[in-house]
Structure formats: C-alpha cells, structure tokens
Length: 301
Image (cartoon, rainbow, N blue to C red; front, side, top):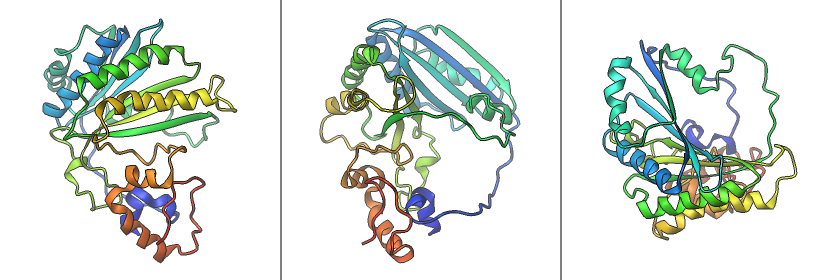
C-alpha cells in the first residue's frame, strides 16, 4: 500500500497522517523570471527548442524551471516566461543561467532575486500567505491535458514549430483563458529519473518535460464550451502528430484528463505498473470503495 500511495493513492485509500524525513533548508536561493513577450511563432519555437537542448545537456542539479506559454497581445504572436529557481548564491547562479540566456533573444523583462528558501516557496505559490489556514474561495471551470516527453526522444524542431504555429493562430482566436506550462523533470542531473520506474507507483522516470495544457471557460464558470475541448486537444495534437505515432510520450496523472478512456489512461498514466496496481487494489479494496468518478480509476483484477 505504501508503494501504491506514491503515485496512485486516490484509487486505493485515504491517508490520515504523514510522517516526513526532512532535508536541511538551503542557505541561499535565487528566484528569477525572464519574459519574452509577443514573439513570432518561429522565435517562440527557437526559445522552446533552446530550453530543451540546454536542460538535456547542461543543467545544474541545483536548478529548477518552468517555461510558461501564454496568448500574445496580437495575432500570430506568443508570450513566454521562464520561472527559474536555483539553490545557491547569486554569484553561483549567474554563470549557470547565462548558458541558457546565450541561446535566447533579449528578454522583454527580467528579474532575479536572491532570497530565503521560504521566500522562494512563497514566490512559487503566487505570493500567497503560506501560514494562513483560510481555504481558497477560487473556483474555475476548466479542461486540462498533459504529456510527458521522453528524454531519449526529444521534441523535433519541426514538431515544435508546428506546435507554436497552432498556438500563435488558434491560441489567439480561442475565447478560453489558457496557458501551457513546460516543467523540467529530466535532464542530465535529474534526481527524479534516478529512481527505478517500479520503485513506486509513479512510473515516469525517463521524461524530460511534463507539459500541462490548461484552458478555463471564458467567465471561469460553467458550462464549459465544446470549442474549449477541441482547442486543448489541438494544443496537444499539434505537437504529438508531427512527432509521429511511434513517439512514446506519457501523461501526468495529477493533471486529470477527463476525456481519456480507461485503456488510454493505463497506457499514459500507469504503464508497466498497472498490473501490480490491479492486484493491490483487489487485495485492499475489493468492493471498490475508493473509486474515482471518471474512467481513470484503477480497477481490481
């Protein structure tokens, strides 16, 4: 059950208490943002491709990053923003980030702040108060999908170009409030990928990026438009189709895609760990008490 909870707990039980083995708080961190506003589809593709190349070959183990992609302010443009955290001092960080910046156009704006580890956590959490017990009253009606790109088969330049062409045109026309996040999981010093795929229920140990595709309805409330479903699916297929049917991407199970069938979910979320998950589900929850209200629940054998 402990094996299952690390990656597939929702289908098998409820955790009532956690015990943590903590690590020492880093003495220094740096939190940085770099904006690239209203880029052409071609320029945006070059930025994404440079990010892929840099993180695959040169990234420091002290580095964490996300590339956020948004609608441009005018047709045929895309706005991008890097959010980078670094566990170290500003003097240590600067030569590391320069290796990426050398591959990119000049940013529209940038900010780099040396700060405490707690302050960096707060920055990553949207500057909300980390000590409050007040629950958020934010509501949203959205559709999300994800893919996890295989490190052994990176995105091609032509596929990324086809993807940014779609984002710059159809993305600008969409009436949804959307974003794409390209989150680094792999790279040459990835601790995530140092764990065996069968060590826990979380099987994804060979990905470079987890890409989240997210679009809210125009007023953030119901009903969700069918055009939004089509748009988000297009965000994905405009990248995956040019990569070909043999591209073995995966998907992140916490970005629940309600449109997947159970067989698709197995192939994208659980892969080779599914049969073990089935046997554990059968043993501990034979009556399927802990069921998920969509087609993606783990079903006992």
